[in-house]
Image (tube, rainbow, N blue to C red):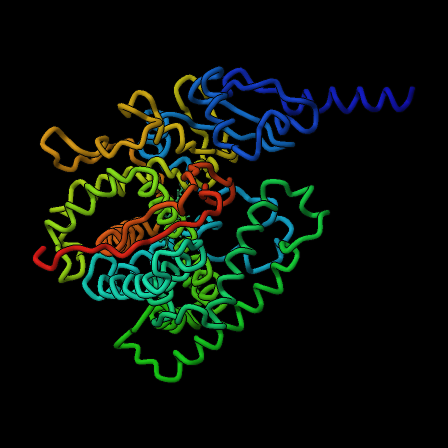
Length: 489
Ligand code: HEM
């Protein structure tokens, strides 16, 4: 009976502690201790979270274990929270993985997981440096076009045989961020590069750890090697940093590392600088840019191949537009975008339907916030449900159909849509948005200029996904046939 009493006492204590105040957003009934963990299908979290909004409205709450989350749905709600009241939701929550490694420099540094002073400095610096080294400039444009040539050569060698585009697309995309950060690309198959690629996969597994911390702490797996990988990566970058130092000329920075070294030098010895620029932080930031900048854009391109194979008539229209505007005798450039409205619309529709970061990254309230009739206290986890906006019935004519017309007016001109927010919005909006848009445009048009993508004979395209860090297509093989276009075009 003592046991029974203890259980009843704990259940009541849990209920009292976790009661929703009247002004808090409503949500499904939560079980003692575990909350709503069993109400969510974690193999398609974004679908579960979107469905709850039908019952509880656009602003509702869930309890994951002892952590309260408020899920925001629909264009109007996200606009109000991320833009109008953006100053209230600029923080990131402390994630379980961070707690475990709280003594580590790892999660207290960088851009993605930090808040306040550290985040502001590092974000501003990264944005400035990406811009300085060519996001929107010719030099970077030629690096992307050159990389697409390497990719096309590799693919042409396969002579239309089926291949899995995963690794090679990752390599091509990662090379762009490597050019910006390290100042050079890596040959496909390069040993150092392959190591970075392995690191990428391990980091993606670490994300799993964050969703199921209790379980993941107990099961064996690659996430336990995170420290080892971290130190390997540190060693790799340290070698690069030493090389940079050897012929470093502060008046002529070559890349992100050079610029960072200048910042370290500037803040050294300045007691009032609250310095956030130090060598370990350089390593973390470089790692974050590499991880955030590779898998996302690569996943989008892998959706692109699949959508083109699924809709050959759309692929043909893209190719016809490229043939008319660019032809076969020169490479695409960013200047062409304005003259390729259909191609641009197709890229936007791939980003919308691909929905690759379906729940954005978690935010948390850094101030008490009033949203409609609800009051959300400081320190609550906020999930901006991007899926609910990219497929919002009030915003899109045919939300669940691949329809480039969403981005075209009656005259076939490209039109921007406010509800197009695959990069999220507000103070934490994706730092690499402009870079990603540039890469997607140049890679996609180069590929469409040269190849026609189709499924291997007898295989139907499957648009199903795997829910991980990004919503990625399940592994597939595809054929890329060189196009035969007459040289007069
Ligand atoms: C954050 C999407 C490419 C770097 C984010 C977020 C989303 C996103 C949804 C979360 C925003 C939020 O918290 O509300 C995408 C998509 C991409 C892409 C769809 C490609 C198709 C890139 C690239 C880079 C990058 C190429 C490399 C520079 C970052 C960083 C953050 C971020 C550093 C964290 C920003 C912060 O916490 O302040 N991205 N991203 N992303 N992204 Fe991207």
